[in-house]
Every structure is written in C-alpha cells, then in structure tokens.
Image 1 (spheres, rainbow, N blue to C red):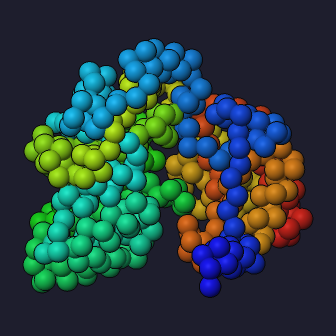
Image 2 (image 1 turned 180 degrees about the vertical axis):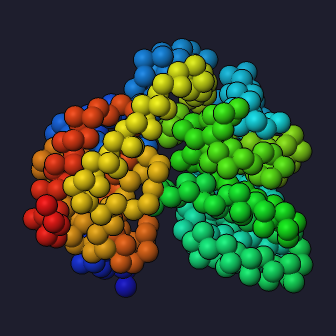
Amino acid sequence: MTLDKTLRQRLDERHRDNLYRQIKTLEAAPSPTAVVDGRELLTFSSNDYLGLASHSEVIRAQQAGAELGAGATASHLVNGHLQVHQQLQQSLAEATGREAALVFSSGYMANVGTLCALLGRADNVISDKLNHASLIDGARLSGANSLRFAHSDLGALRRQLQRAADRGGNILVAVDGVYSMDGDLAPLADIAALCREFSAWLMVDEAHGFGVMGSEQLPLAGSGAAAGLGQDALPVLMGTLGKAAGNAGAFVAGSQALIDYLVQFARPYIYTTGMPPAVASGCNAAIKLMRSEPELNRLLQANITYFRRCAAQANLPLTDSSSAIQPIVLGCEEIVMAVSAQLEQRGFLVGAIRPPTVPAGTARLRITLSASHSYSQIDALIDALLAVLQEKMAVPS
C-alpha cells in the first residue's frame, strides 16, 4: 500500500471515530475576544491566564527585544546566549526560590531533555497516568525502567516506589502540579513525603501553576510552593512561559548543580538554536508584571470562583477543580463535538477534548478562564452552556 493511501486510511478512521483534529486560525491572540476563521468569538480556550499575551508592556518589550536580533543565530552554548536570556534565567530563579534556572525553547523540550539527561537504563521513573504527553515521552525516551500509578493514588505510588527500590538504581517521580485536562492539583506534600521516605527525586511540571499559584513568599512559584515545598523537597521544577506569562518557551529551575548538569547533558538544550531575544525580552516583562501587579492573579481567582458558583447554580456538571481549567466531562466524542460546534455558532470558542488526549469515555469541554474575562462574559457563557446542554443532553434547568 502506498504511503498516501495508508495515511488516508488512518485519517478516515479518525473522522469516523469523531477524533479528527482541525486547526482554527486566529487573526491575533485572544484578549479574550478573537477573530477565529473570520468570525469574532469570545474565547474560553486560551491558557493566557493573566491576559499578558496582549498586554501593551509585554508587546513593547518584545518589540524592543527584536532590535537585539531576529534570532539568537546559534545554540546557547555556541553564541546564542544573550544577556537578555541571562536576565530571564535570573528572574525565573528568583520567582521560584531556586538557586538557578535554564531556559528551553518549549515545555516539551524541557521535560524530554531533563528526564533523558537525569535517567538511564539502570534508573527508575515513576509517573502519574494522567501526566502530560511530554513527561510520558521523556520517561519512555530516557530508557529508564518506567512505572506508572493511578492518578494521584498515593497507595499506588507507594507500591511503585517499593518496586523501584527493590530493583535498585536512582528513582525519579514525575507529576504535573496542575493537570492540564482535569484542572485538579497533585497532592504534592504527600508525594514529596513518599519521595523522602524512598530517597526518590521529585520532578513537577508547573506549566499550569507557574505565575498563578504559590506561597506568600513565592506567589509565582506554582503548586509546589503552594504545598509548602522548597528546593530540597522539589529538586526539579519545570515551568512554561506560554501560559500565565503569555509568551513562549519554558524553563527548569533547581540547584546550581542541576542547571550546570543540564547544560552539559540535556540534548534538546544543547542542540537547539537559542530562544529568540524578542521572546526572552517579552518574558522578562511578563514576570515583572506578575510581580508588580498581583491584582491580575486576584482577578483570575475571582473569575474562577464566580464561574464555579454560577455553574453550580445552573446544575452544570463540574469537576473538582480550583484552577483556571474548568472541564465539563460529557463522555461521548460525538456529543462533545456537537456541543462545541453549537457554542461556536452562539459566539463562544471552547475546546472539545477527546481521546487520545484524555482517556476513552471522558471526552470533555475544556473551559479555561482568564483575568481578562468579565463577569458578564462568564454569565453569557453559562447561559449558552445551559441552553446547548439542555438541548443535547437534557441537563436539568
């Protein structure tokens, strides 16, 4: 069979199973309205939690950063590491309460590069079953003995830690701090306690926690800081800059020894052209705003509380999420697609998430909230959700 015929056959299967993905084209980043495929829609699908992707100060900083060069022109280790990158790394280390930080071009590269650098065939990696794809792939590619445990199940984690300890070798436990499709938080304090008991290293993906969660001392550091974990308890912290920071790229933060080691052994860092200086400059501005304008996070938290209260009053099927990610699990792929399409007809862009991104039978609407949303916009979404779900699924009024 020819390549094209094989590919068409597989694509047809995706269509039949209601799993085919289509790209939507926006004229500009949502703020939170956007022109999507030629229509103006109110978006509840963006990870721009603080509205910084369209913030004038971030945009001006990025424009100024472009004056340093359109690109870094080489990898960080050759001549692609500029002063603006060093400033960003210092800011990230300070924001997370770590000794040092290292910037990567994407969160995917940060996770894969870190896991593959830290682990080998003699080692063990233990992962939550609902981890992000980049952690899953990093665990596989590392060559380490890979074990998984049921989502946030501490008993299952203990059993896998014991299996790894019996086998020998280093043990790394990798989890999301905030799960991107469910919005729930990992029980990090308990996980860290188990890691201490078994002398395991803890790695947390803070993609959806960095910038919007933390402690009183480290308000931007993420869900680990919110759980009271410092560098010793959480030695490997990964965060992204394309969500709360409204930009692009990612970082790993930890001890100076960890960062020095990754510079030597993290292949996606070593063999990739450095982050464009404009991006680094925009990220620096975003972190400065996060620190100087805590009101942005307060607005986000108020919107989360308001949405959940209104959704509960409307009897919408909420999950147990206190984060900006508020999924409504509908189960059936066909229904999720139909509801999403109806919402779009009514002027709302809400993500329809289906397998393999989520487990079979758990297709969902993935609603994400931003500090930029108004209460009236949230009210309009609730009304539209209620009308469409009553039509498609007979949700009680």
